[in-house]
Length: 110
Image 1: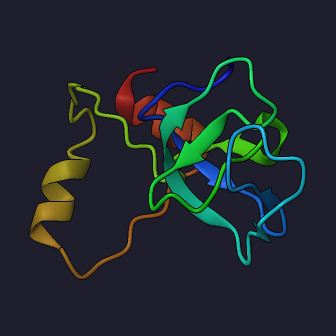
Image 2: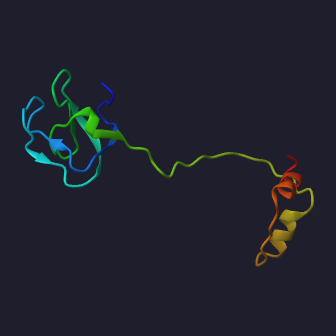
Image 3: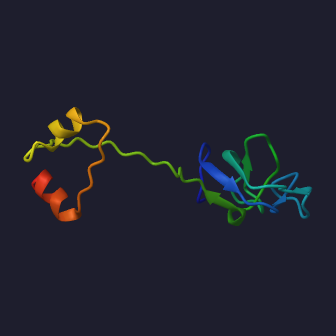
């Protein structure tokens, strides 16, 4: 099984939803793309996955994993104010400072 209970997933628009995990015909179709969670799994059945709100049972091929588009990373860096740039910015907060890649490398000692 690709997914487990609790996984955040996307149900594709228009996918068939079944009343039971072994139903032969769909009870309805998903009206819009939905972000939801897997709440039940019926291993070895035709439509093994059910999600939040009990919309209906669905197939693995009708689900895609949800990936948060706003992944945030936390890093710690130490700045060396080689050319007193940070002091300048603090003293002139209304000024815009533009540097090219080489200047940036020089400032950060890279």
